[in-house]
Image (cartoon, rainbow, N blue to C red; front, side, top):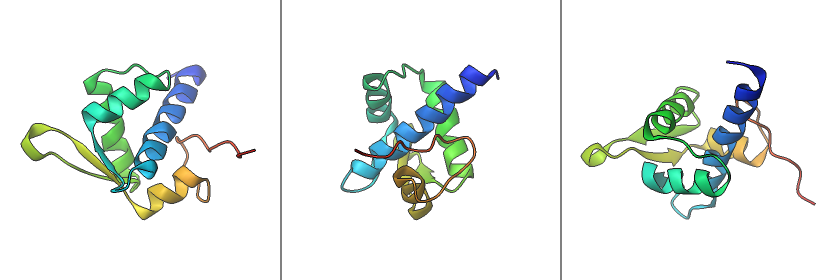
Length: 99
């Protein structure tokens, strides 16, 4: 993966965490996440999103389950810290400070 691809992937991972952090239940299914990513400039296929959700789960940032074959991601406490910028994980972009 080249440096530009790493940057895009890190930003995409942050977007997923931030979208989950904004939900009252801290969770969304893969279809909602794909729409949210597209709205933020990240058009990804189902395989790519599933791969990234699995990576985020390996890092302990989300918990994933598949009821009826649909992936549902739920933000963990560690994932919330990363989404808010109070913790850092290599491979996830750090959020920009709010103005």
